[in-house]
Image 1 (spheres, helix red, strand yellow):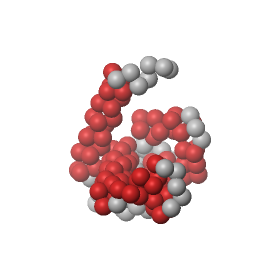
Image 2 (cartoon, rainbow, N blue to C red):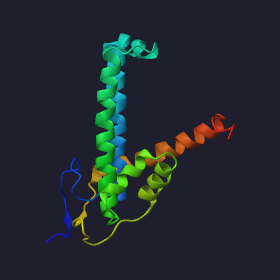
Image 3 (cartoon, rainbow, N blue to C red):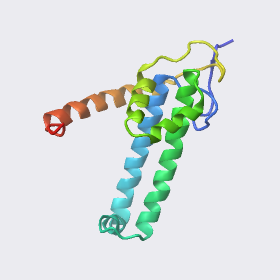
Length: 156
């Protein structure tokens, strides 16, 4: 009998290891980028409307998209906190500036419990999650290096 559990990643119940957490956040980011690209191609006027500061259908669509993104960000954060045997209520810290950066680093670098904890058994990280997480890690490192080399942080 396996000591791992495979559950729905879209439910707050359960746990996420570090690689699963990164993979699902990467998937969320890619989905958002694809959705914005589709909107830009299909209805470019919606994006122009947003840049003009108008409160039309484009703004409503953007608000709906970001509500969905925030929902899944909370789900993934709760699951990762569960892997550390912490309450999901700590996920509200992602709304606090600067504290959210510390929480994010904690969730990425702190190892989870390697045995069953109060929130369930260890969730097995799927092969595609491992691959996607490592791609995300490499892309984030390249983005940080690129930002520094382009002088984005020169005023800090």
